[in-house]
Length: 336
Length: 135
Image 1: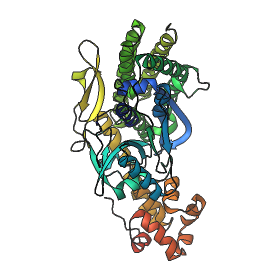
Image 2: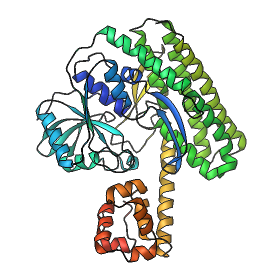
Image 3: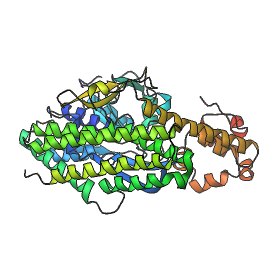
């Protein structure tokens, strides 16, 4: 059984699953940047005290699962989402969906994902892919970050759907539960509410570690890392920051370029030129994130290492925080 | 980032996939491009693996000297943290912490050892003797 499902490679797994599933459901105009923007995907958080792989816990995007949920909600499309205790029931339900011609999004762990390079296989449990068919014991997989479709045996798929640890997927699957067309008016409305929510998330969540404030907070932390942690550990921390920012799935520059692309696409629905000028601001922000990554690499590769170098690194982030603050302020002032 | 500036450095992604990135064309319009990799992030990933290898070697030494049970070595080898090992083994975290003590580990029943061995994909004998393959 093979469903006629179009695999479109995307930068980020959840966006890709969302836009590809929605396209299948009849939302022809959906794109990855639109799904990302409507789902208010842009974010920044530095979670103090928590360690991930012995480094700081930093994220450039919103929580796993939210982009799919928010985008479907905004387009008024009902969603089925299920988790399972029993792998047998999970597999049976998946098979029934495929038999019924419904491609299904699955949350999986990456560690046992056989088609990924070994160097990328950590115990990270919030990866997403689409299952769109089964031939003998092989499931047909559309993993949005892969160039082409792949397969997993039923054993392999079961193992990644029931990966264990933080954010364990518990066999979670999800799909839009309706085939329908979405009007231009609905997309317009969804874009507006997506931007407004993103303004709120980046500017107005209280506390020092989230949004634009979080970027500043991180900047000031980095300036202190050299004295506090020593060169070796600060190098590890900076490398972690760069990995979160540039890892597969970010579209480069910690999702900032993707948000710029979203604002340009939004302009086709809302011909307000502020959207275009703010898109340029995000291009600038993304470029600066990349310059910061080059500076960080200088430190973790041992080419740089003075306090001055750490200050430069921190200053990049301060400059970024200013640009993003101004950009979101301008978005919040748009009269829709 | 301009499309022509998209880095095309060799990376571990070669032979697997390419990284899709959002880039701007000459007139500043967004489009996408595929990247083989970027040396800056390849170095970050290398560093993460250097750290992991160091931790594995460290845990191996400690286990061989009898300062800690072989569990720590296999946890590092399989990149696991407490939550992950607890999830896969079915033991509580406090139990695993206890089993980290060499004295407690030595007296674990075969049944319990087998649960760990299965998670780490090694034999009980290898588990007891800190023999694990890094590939």
